[in-house]
Image (cartoon, rainbow, N blue to C red; front, side, top):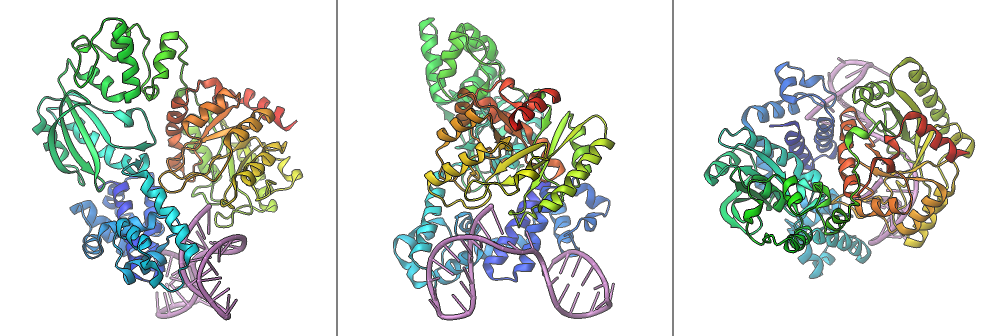
Length: 574
DNA sequence: GCCGTTTTCGGCCCGACTGTTTTCAGTCG
């Protein structure tokens, strides 16, 4: 099993134990172990071989035993027993905003709620009134959280599907009878919320595909069907409790055409069909047209007298129009990125020292970074007081002197307080090289108040960047109420940069809004918000968002040279 | 369950906010 899979098991154990009413400290050890494993940059299998598992803080004898068991047998009996006893779907209760372990435990134990459907029935049927201490306001709040989850319908955030998606593509690529395997559909377009997981393989035998897939744990309910999307054979299955998996089978002549057709959203394909029709080419409706066979994706677009359209722009029809008009942008690429302007260290809630982050960022090839630990109001995150910030700044500056080949900017991720003022005084802020301002508390404001709050922050001459501007957590929490158009306008007026936060939990701004901001003349920045060394590698998730937002590299400030970046920061602060 | 000792048992992230209370419990960040 991979680190990811093992971490997930521990997280689930922690949740289940808490719902059972087990000592919360014992339960939280499992959750913490999961978190530790998530941020590990070495393979657990390797550590186990070297007998070093217990050298990791938070991993003792018992957890080591379970890790070894999972590495050797692929399962954890302790966890399997919990699941058998309580059901896996109980874990979904904790996904509801406003429901923590205590409330989940009460609904579970006192009302027999086992899954989200049960929860809905208890709310709608009024049976929650049987619970002492849970009144109508609490239920209203929970109901809102539950409706958010129901609105996701069967969709899953990318971060949730990624581990199994990677396991599946690896198995398919390793199968000797399979020539090629690639993600297609939403996954290839880098959508952050998915309806299904789709892959294309070059292989004409569905049995071979089923054989390979059955080696991946958690892939179930195999069926071979004729797909109206690919116009050919397809292996359908499910992963992650009923999330649809589709593997389209193509022969070598049809592979690229199949990739093109399965990657395109319906609107894009319709627009492409429209263009094909004007050139007397057969439309691709439910089957692969002959004129596409044997062609590469580029040559298919070429045959329709269009330039190549990158997968990220195949969400809609407007990219076809732009392609026809010759106005497609040259999209930003990962290699354009020269720095990372938002990250944390052990000074606040990060895991590594300033020096470790600097060395790791240098190894990533960055020319510059900004160290931006939390400010005092973020207490859980061990936010810095003004006094600690000054010491922090000194350390950043001295490390910057010592380490060559990378420039380290002294920054802060400063809390935006409820009234829109900042968490440090102006004279403190003035000493920083860069200020990222973010909302971390006070989410329940009216749209008018929140917009006013944001705009006041943007008006501060010390603020360079607004971090994760909408505050959404993918699949977990909607963003706060905000008039983003007004915020974009204010950012444009004051030369404040909006962030595309590359953390897979956030991906905030989202593409449509980032595109809107860009069109309004606002500059953007793509930052990892890394809290540990491995997360510095996640810039590409932000690049995907930027590409879907039609951004060129000129729209993103951390593609700039250090000199140009510093000019921009100084111009703002002056 | 893990850690770190004044070494074998006590403490474990902290404060704001909200709702249901009438002094506190639960959630969130």
